[in-house]
Image 1 (tube, rainbow, N blue to C red):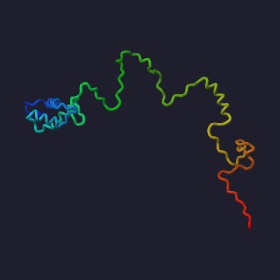
Image 2: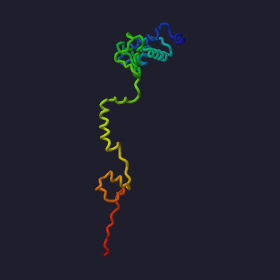
Image 3: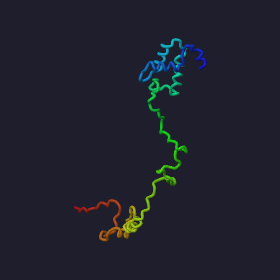
Image 4: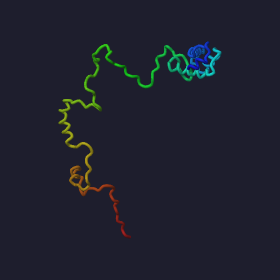
Length: 188
C-alpha cells in the first residue's frame, strides 16, 4: 500500500471517494460495473497510476466487505438506507433470555415439570376401563387373538372340534388338488 501512495500524485483524492463519486454520478438503478466506474474515474481525474484498475478493484473489494458498497449481479451500488438488514443463511438464533429480564419469575405458561421422555406418552389410566375389562375378557374367551394355528391333516380330533360333526364323514382330505378320476373304458 505504501508504494501505491508514493506512485499516486498528491492532487488525487482517496480511491474510496473517487469510487463513491463515480457511483453517484453514473446513477444507474441497477448499479455500475467495474469498467464503468474505472472509465468515469479516468475521464474525471487525469493523472492515474499505471495499476489503476487493480488498485480500484482492491478498494472496491474492501468497500464491499465493509458494507459501504453493495455488490449485486456484477454491479456496485450504494446500500439503500431504508432497506431492511440482510439476513444470513439458515435459521436465525433464538433470542437470549438471560438474567437481564425485567422479572425473575418464569412466565405463567412455562412448563416446570421433569423433562419429557422420548416416544409416545402412555394412555391415561381411566377408572371406567377397569369396569369394562371383565366384559372384554368374556367376549374374547371364545377365540384367541391372532390367526389360529395351522391344523394337521391327520388330526381327526382337531377336525371335529373345528368343524361340525355332520361335515366329517370320512378320512380328512389331503392338501392340494385331488387326483383326476379314472373312468373305465369298456373293451370292444
